[in-house]
Length: 300
Image (cartoon, rainbow, N blue to C red; front, side, top):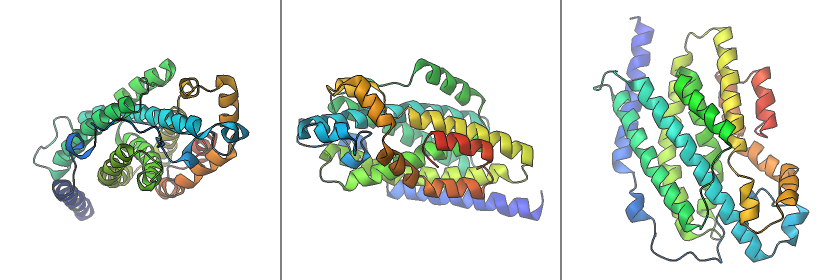
């Protein structure tokens, strides 16, 4: 092993040790931290209104405050359900990646810690969606099957960069929600827990992406950039199910039409992903082909 490779491995282990230490000192138990007992207060939103897919449209302006709040509650539940779906993909990819590796390696131990975090997050999101009185929102069957294939085949930088995309998009919107007093207090607590703990996960994903790309050639970067962008497209476009509009009592066709044309929401997504796109570009994972998918998903 060369001196540079030894230094890189030592640096990777040190990062994992720091993340393990952080997890020991700053982690939460959602069962105790979240107020699950108090009844849902319908005077609160489920998410910051500005993040609603209809905010800024003529339809939004016609909705009563009560309808607006119900819509954001359904949208927040849909985002949570999509989060559960991808967290299950994430856990399987990490287990497969670290299968039969050295358990004394801090990176191995951190991977198990992150998987444990994601299990708690998924349960927390599930309970939160139920408290918001929302049904089980799921991606379309086609997307579910794509996810099944992706979690089985994706590895290396493709897996970790895709993990980073999903976590970064959620992180920015949830930082807004957790500070917004219009949002239900239990939802704000959920968001705060997720933001704090996911910050460690994102650091690990960035480090793993960089590490796996060392020495990667042009073709490999081109292929993986495209794989990550396609995954990002389906993750982001699945976040808010079309069914939220009907469940909020809205005109489904009109809501879908206006949401898809909503420039305000597209702008919110693009601004939330500025740092992510900068990272992907620096890693050589933002190519002309991949940019097309990010633009289609309103991330670029």
